Length: 355
Ligand SMILES: Cc1cc2nc3c(=O)[nH]c(=O)nc-3n(C[C@H](O)[C@H](O)[C@H](O)COP(=O)(O)O)c2cc1C
Image (cartoon, rainbow, N blue to C red; front, top):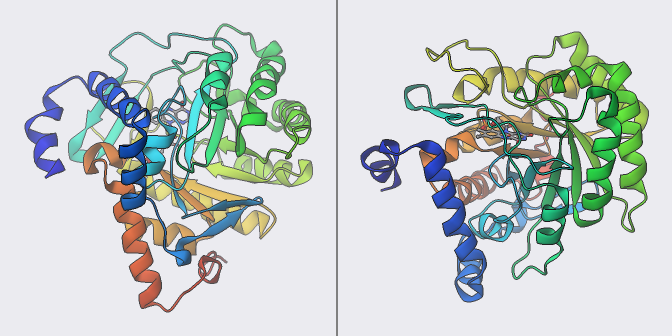
């Protein structure tokens, strides 16, 4: 049904217009308590076998919504009701900013991919803090992903991230330092260990000082050389971070015909994202929680990531092609598969094929 609507209707409209329309519809769902609760009861993961614990947080399932869809944290309840076990909001920057000029979002349906150069369009940390501070009507686990304000020079990046962390860490179930989006000039340079160490140390101090101690993760790019993946993994262990999210979008254009600039996501990212996960698991052992994202399309992909050592899995691009029931379907099929394999606890399979 959704595929028909997508090919006959949605694909004829500008992708960002469709995105805004969707966000507004989801906000409407969020402010309609009865419907929201009904949808949550029907679609949110509830099978006990799906439950998983990571960095002290109890997730109702392993599959969540990756950052970039809910930039301003307005759809957390709606997306949780639709079946995502957690919603990572953002990227949020200390100061509000408009992002890059449109068009900046492109569908590549044949390749089941997306290219975006949004550039962290968001209403800023204070606005997000106001939204996140409101009481929620359905249970929702919220990760807050923070990035650098575009106009802030690299020399003041630490201060800029810390400003966001101070406002948002107390409201987050986990906090993510994003140093891997390709659409803010110079951002990915912060992945170099000598720049990353002071940044993560400063943000961790803020995250550690919240009443519950907010878990801290770093999100990395798939374009890092293997040695740099290892270096970030070692740094995360050294600083006592809670986990790594791998990966963000890629600047590679392997396997696609489009030459639009920006970050490529979806199916073409699948192999590299899995490769980075395997490398990280080999490097950190059980020392960190790994969150795998990039090219996940169905339950087979989620299964593969769990076996390779991810505790949580996220997705975004495939939802554009699969529709609003995507996360619900993945959790439902995962629960069936667990039963078939007589697995009653996800911990039995996480990392089973890791070397
Ligand atoms: C339109 C769009 C916007 C995104 N914006 C962000 C962002 O603001 N921050 C971030 O960390 N990742 C962002 N991402 C990257 C996703 O979180 C994810 O890491 C990447 O798309 C790979 O997953 P996928 O193949 O399932 O989409 C964005 C992705 C897309 C498609």
